[in-house]
Image (tube, rainbow, N blue to C red; front, side, top):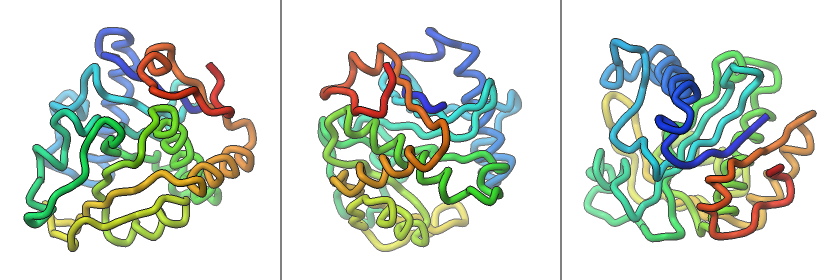
Length: 219
């Protein structure tokens, strides 16, 4: 099951927050070797986690299989306060209807499975539904240049905002991904094709959202 959460999960559900941060540490630090994020407690969290974060989870029982975080660009976010230099002097769009898509992670066993692409499409679809529910125009995302094609394949109108920049040993390119009708059609198809896929949203997220929850979401 997939679900979308908002609010201060460290306070409202500390057990879930702990599982999220440990999943992120396992993926970004142990798997991707982001040594700058290594913590002795095995929890990857940063200054951007808090009551304004949107958390998107894919779970099986208590196991987290996928995760993504959305941050409002009206507040400090990664592109504005962590590595603005990757814009190379350019500007990124910001505003109430633009969020930043960060900490996208899929569990290794799902990435290496025969259904990896199909599952990845469901995760992207959950992000798209969250963006629609928030009445967003699009999302800022920083990713490896080779992944821009995946954004386009899943229906996003992807606009690179600068040339790729090497950051901590890996190339990053800032992209503005506009939500389109094709994004949502692709999301719907992904959920339809993944047996038993459901998307649940928390009451806090529904109160946050500026638009009605899309049809595949179970409140």
